[in-house]
Image (tube, rainbow, N blue to C red; front, side):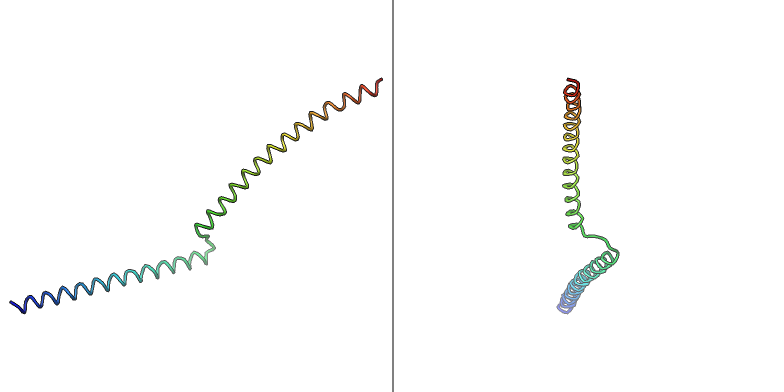
Length: 97
C-alpha cells in the first residue's frame, strides 16, 4: 500500500514538473512569435500604434488650424471686397466734381 502511494506521489510530481515545463515552453513560444511578428512588421514598413496615434493627432490639429485659417481668409476677402466696392464710388464722386 505504501509503495502505491509513493508511486502516485512520484507520478503527481512528474506531472506537475511536466506542466511547469509546458508552461515555460508556452511563454518561450509566445516571445518568439511576438519577436518574429515585430520583425516582419518592421521589414514591411508598418508603423507602431503609438506612432500612428501621434501622427493622427498631429493631422487633426493641422486640419483644425487649416479650417480656422480658411475662415479667416474668407473674412479678410469679404472685408477687402467691401472696402473695394466702397472705394470706387468715392473716387468717382471726387472725379466728377
